[in-house]
Image: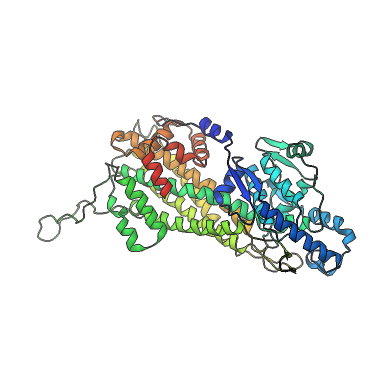
Length: 548
């Protein structure tokens, strides 16, 4: 099937009638966040959410009228909470919180990451413990449904009292003093509010604090990471299948009995997936329940065929299965965090109480993001080792050096691409030091332990981009290897992938710059619909992918 980048772009331009409901009775996941971030879904607030929010807002109003000491509402912030502030100063207090926190630096987060953050904040506030009005959530909904995002600098948060710095830039945009963008670029304040059909947000007694105090930046970015990593593992499995076909590998190591004997769920899922596709791969060596008999000999008969493959073929279920288990753990944490209440203080209207606590502390997402970074880096390691073997004439079992059979030496084939894959993996490893343990006291030692959760999520996002580049190099290599062998003997799954690669990258007959082709494939492989597009004409493969 021939598909190019233009078709992928056009697939994103069509907005389906997909609606994601927001509220305490809803449980959005990473795929929902990705649809919203990409502008492929509309958002609505449930009536349950509105009712609970109204109750917490009324409870807070009653406490304020009783002149109670409420952090960030009738007190200063952080170490200045010992200063009591009259409710008459509420408007100034809430605005000053946003102003003093709006210190983010560095490039702006992407449009889709900023939208993921908006959605994560919306879902958290809709749980009804934050005492915000309909005015706040309605503007967040309008922002998403109008295709907008606030401009949020990527650096400046330690993930301790939530993501104060990035969320302050979200709040700044809502009150009309920040900046906006859509998928095409900057949007003026006037144009943004016109598209949302709302005026600038006036802040209620706790609404500045509720907007900035929570884990929504790390959670929104982590949700996008989880969705992309899910496609990555599936692509890793498919590319590993094609790689094994190139080498006429043994399908025996992928037998589901092996996975069942291990008992690890991710490994078992990879075994089931690969085994199903391997049964359609004629180039793989058939599974024999019993090994062949030894050659007749008296003592030793050397240089016989190896009964098993190198680890980059044989141990694919073990490696990708472990990555899949880490991904599932990550996505479970993120799904719970999306519907978590992560600000402070919390108003429990039904119980008539307000509690000062620390749900803004982002350790769960920080740990999960670091774990996912390691898991996806190992996918890249696997791909890089497969690239190294398929391009090395001493290991590639008859393929020409660097997959270049036309005047090899005059032309160098994939030599440079293999070096790039190695460089990318080295850079990933340099980012693998956990962010989640890099606590550094801040805020006059009020925040004496911090989580660095957003740094962890951002690092994982950066690494995922590079992993997809390694995947692209691997796809180019296996497509070249298939053309150098008998293409007709490869499985239908392999040939569909080959056709997709060839739609934008022709056979490498003579050396040419490959940078643009690598980047282009990486962008296409990152598309949420990529596997459906590649295997649109193969319902059996689509079925196995859906069950994976």
